Length: 242
Ligand code: PGA
Image 1 (spheres, rainbow, N blue to C red):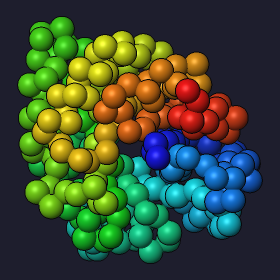
Image 2: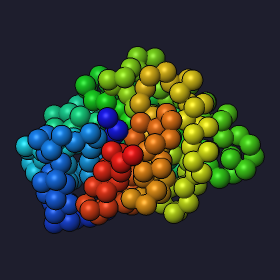
Image 3: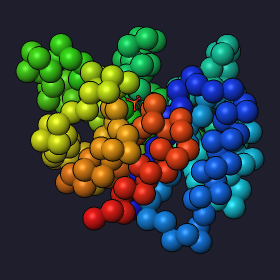
C-alpha cells in the first residue's frame, strides 16, 4: 500500500479546505478497495473542520508540525497530544521549510518525533539536501547526518515514515531524476531498514506513476499538487497503475 500524503502548507481558507476535503472523502471510501493510504495535512486551524468531513472515508488526518513538549507556556505552538486528541494519526516533522525558516535543527526534529511517538502519532520525518550541498557532492553525507540525528532509536514501521525531499525540488517544478531518487532511496533504505520511505518535491499527476514505481519509494509527500482534489486523486491512483 503506497502512502500518499498531502501537505497543504499555509494555503486555503475554510471554504477551500472543506470543498477539497469533501471531494476527497467522497472518492476515497473503504468500500472502493483502494490500494493506497491517503493522508491530508491541512493548516492547523483547519484540522477540526476537515476532521469532521472525513467520517466514513478511508482518509487519515495529519498535522504539519508539533512542539516537542505536550503542554505548557509555548504561545502559538501545538502539541502532538492535541493533534492526536482532535483526530490526527500523523504529523510531519522537520520539513525543510521548518528547518530553513524556523531554524529547526535535527536535534529539534528528533525531540518533535519523540513527542509524536509519545502521543501515539506516526511521525513523518523529512530530510533532504539543498542545491549547494548537492553541487558540492555532499547530498549523501547530509542525508545520512539528518537520518542519524533526527530519527529516534525507537522508530519502527508503525510509528515512523521518512520523507526524502531534496530542498531544490520543493515547489520549484524540478524533480530529481528517477536515477537520483532510486539511488538516494537505496542509500536511505540501508540506514532506515523497514521504515517506509516517501519521495517529495514537485510530485504531480504527470510524474507520479514513474516515481511511485521506483524501488524503495513507498509513497509520496505532495505540496502544491495536493491543493487540487482531482490532481491529488490522480497521483494516488497512479500508485495502482502498472
Ligand atoms: P511540492 O512540495 O510538492 O510543492 O514541491 C512538497 C513538500 O514540500 O512537501
